[in-house]
Amino acid sequence: MDCRCGKKAVYDGLGQKLCKEHFLRYFEDKVFWTIRKYKLIEQGDTICVAASGGKDSLTVLYLTMKFCREHNVPFFALAIDEGIEGYRDHTLDDLRLFCDQKKIQLHVASFKQKYGMTLDAVRDKAMKEFNKKPCTVCGILRRTSLNRTARELGATKLVTGHNLDDESQSLLMNVVKGNMGHNAALGPITGLHDNEKFVPRVKPLYFVSEKETRLYCILRGFHVNFNECPNIHLSFRATVRDELNLLEQKYPGAKQGIVNAFLEIIPDLKEKYRNRKSFSYCERCGDPCASKICNACTLEEELCLKSG
Image (cartoon, rainbow, N blue to C red; front, side, top):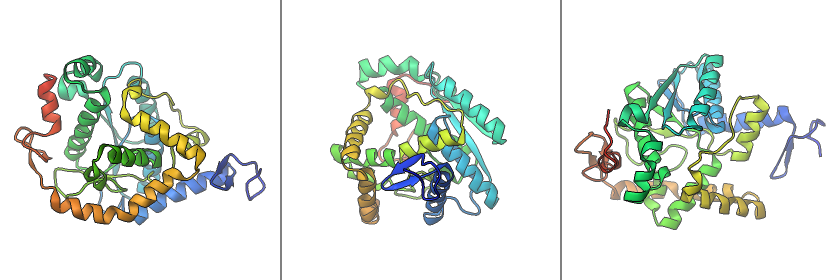
């Protein structure tokens, strides 16, 4: 079937059939609406965009660029090179090309530079000696690297490329594991406590799906590698993702329904866990954490990493 304008439809989602022009407008309008509604980017901000060169990060970087340049808000891109050979090196090439073409300032920090070793180098040790999957190690060190580097570069907000699929997966993962306190820290703006050492993370792609983001990338002609991280199959997230995709196929709109239900209760969740969860400061690095030593410093000690 055709778009309402009579042109050939390229998108068919939840009863909407849209041509290329109308899909691009629909997608961008939804992202910019999210930014405005939740005040993700405001005057006085300095925006750091967490970028990897994948479809989500290039999309959110492009739309953040459009929004920030229109509203005269300073921004830059930040990439973390975990050291995943044959994967991250290729996506970083795509990111550098994109930033060169769009005249976007790009900073790159690496696990090798910050911890003295790549993810590939510690992968087997983490799994065999400490029963930690690569995604666990990467997640802790990547989040810490992004926060510290964004803070050092003067950012007031950290934009990430998390989309509707990512959020629904995270919500369900936390429910399955009984970590409702972790869900309280989710949402379009993450976190429970304001702290000068935490750069707030914001998610402009919060209400757009992975399928929509992929199509947007293709229609915009972004040079992007759609390959997944080679470690993803080892993660709990991959299992939840596959089950949610099956649920979405059978019941279209299921992912949106999960997120909408969560948004109804998030104010109460945040209030409950904000009052219950106290934090101190890591005795080693000084970052806020819930125990004497933060997860990143604990991991550094276990894996004999060198913080730098």
